[in-house]
Image (cartoon, rainbow, N blue to C red; front, side, top):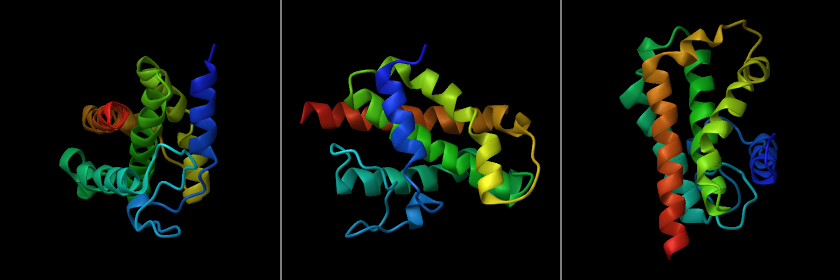
Length: 152
């Protein structure tokens, strides 16, 4: 059973409608944004996390290691959603549900591929250690930023 906070988080993430990647997406006065309507995600945090999810990916998975550019872009989108989603869940008081969030987001791989290109890819690549390490890093980063936000 998916809890209400997780449903809310998934709805926010799936309804964001941002361009990929968030690092290059502008909206209003935000120079980099996830395009998520969530009051606690202030401009500075939005920008910081958009940049972090983008730049940290190459520390885990160099672009040249991805089977195709599409694989890399899908992994980046998953990382962005893990980071923003874990921030939202932690802010809502449900940090323990971030692992469930990751499982739910993995279900989005097929629809992401269809959205980004008409190319068939396997989700096997996303279960490799380097890919999972990146997603775990994004999840932890979003959680930590929310904890700092909640303390201020």
